[in-house]
Length: 244
Image 1 (cartoon, rainbow, N blue to C red):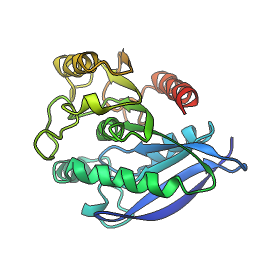
Image 2: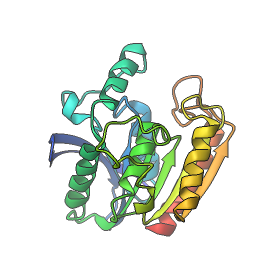
Image 3: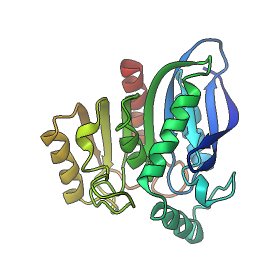
Image 4: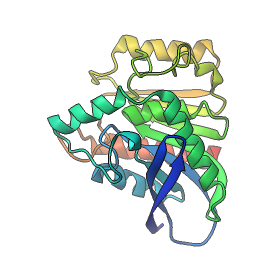
């Protein structure tokens, strides 16, 4: 499908949040997938990923995940300065504020004529964590989480007992976890901890570990694995078509 891009500024509990929206140009109603970016916000690789998903028949909403901490339209560079600022933002914004962002997106897009009112979540890196986090919302029927950071370590700010790992039992929809075994940000022990939590809480989940590095989906830089990325896009499309 051919897709189009819209830019929408949403009111949230913590201020205005810009969202890039990618959706099929043809008439109809399509499931909505909230696509959470890495710490650098809506970079060119994130936009290309969103367009790939939109071209398979989804409304893909990409929010500026740290909108409270940056000017509208901020995109951080893939360099040390961008990484440092993105990590600072990551460790500043509470998970509760991400939760209210998710609610704002659902409430807005369920009213749009092109949305079927079915919602999924997808993300990479910190965005993989935020997709996992979004699945705590019962409106999220399916989540696809790629190399999600900081779930096992509980290093993101939140209220006591409200971390994503502890709240795994509240996930109601289907969830897929994708990992690279050569990812230095989530150790084997960390992955095993999350896997056991999903088992212990009897969640409906699928688990994949591939020979890949962190950010293997990002089509810029030395870690990009095109074959593996295409395989994961196919897994995500199949999951959302089935669940949504």
